[in-house]
Length: 115
Image (cartoon, rainbow, N blue to C red; front, side):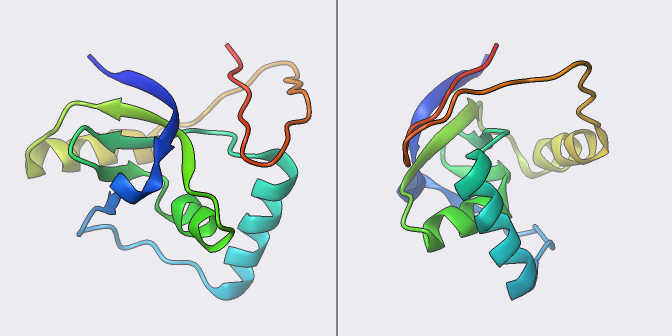
């Protein structure tokens, strides 16, 4: 169905036209600091044709930081109704985590895949 790509080229990504979310400079600076410290905790979600389904602000932050590749889950292309349904489901879902997760330190531009 989909494919996980560890080093998806951000040059292939285009934002979804209907994405209303924006963050101010303070928020963007905080997001960049988080990415520097922790890396990208959740991969981007894109369609095969490059529409960004999840991760608009993270993508903007990485591009500002000079990062041009990121882990992404690549899903099949959807029509507009399918994209809307996916976004409603995705944005309404929580990421429950039990216990602790420890990821080894990475060099800039490297990613750890944690099962």
